[in-house]
Length: 220
Image 1 (cartoon, rainbow, N blue to C red):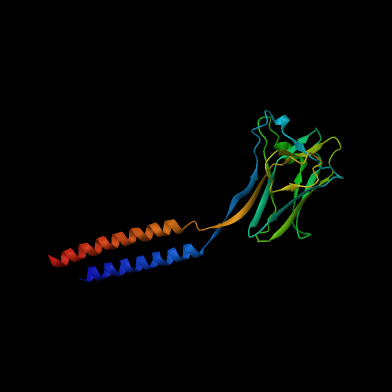
Image 2 (cartoon, rainbow, N blue to C red; image 1 turned 180 degrees about the vertical axis):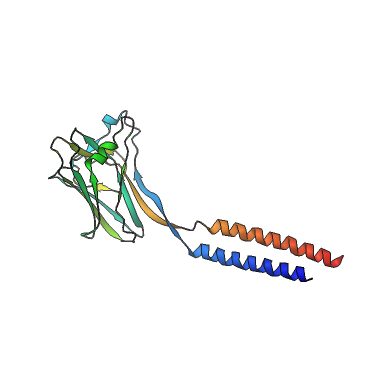
C-alpha cells in the first residue's frame, strides 16, 4: 500500500511538472530567421553573363532601395552583387533608414564581393541590418561607395518578374527589370511545444497503465 501511494505521488509530480512545462513552451518563443520575401529566379537566362546588371555603385553614385514592412521584424537583406575589375580596394557603406532616420549600418569591403564571384553561380551577400524591433512603415537602404577604384564596376544583379518587394529607385535601367534579393525577417516560433506535449501524453498513458495494474492487484 505504501509503495502504491508513493508511486502515485511520483506520477502526480511528474504529470504536474510536464503540464507546467507545456504551458511554459506555449508562452516561451524564439525568433527564427525566415526568408519572407524573395526574388531569385534566373532560370530564363542561359548564362551568368546574360543576367541583367542594374545601376552602379561608385564613390559618387549611391544606390537607393526602398520597401515597406508592417508587423514584422527585419533581420537582414541579401543582395546579389556583380563586380568586375582587378582593384579590390574600397568599401560599401550600407545604411538602413526608417522614416528618414538611420537605424543600422554595415560596411562591406569590396574584396568581400570579389570573394563571392563564381563562374557557375551567383552568391548573395547578406546584410544584417535589423534592430530586432517591429518598425512599421517605409524603409530606405542606401549603398554608398568609398575608396572604390574607377576601374571597378559594382552593380546589382536583376531579373524580370511580375512584381518586386524591393524597389531599386535609381537603377538607371529598363523599368521592367528589378534586383534579385532575399528579405529576411524574424518570426516567433515555439520550438518545444510538440516535445512537451508528446512527453505529457506519454506520461498520462504510463500513469493510466500503472493505475490499472494497481487496481488489478487490489482485486486479487
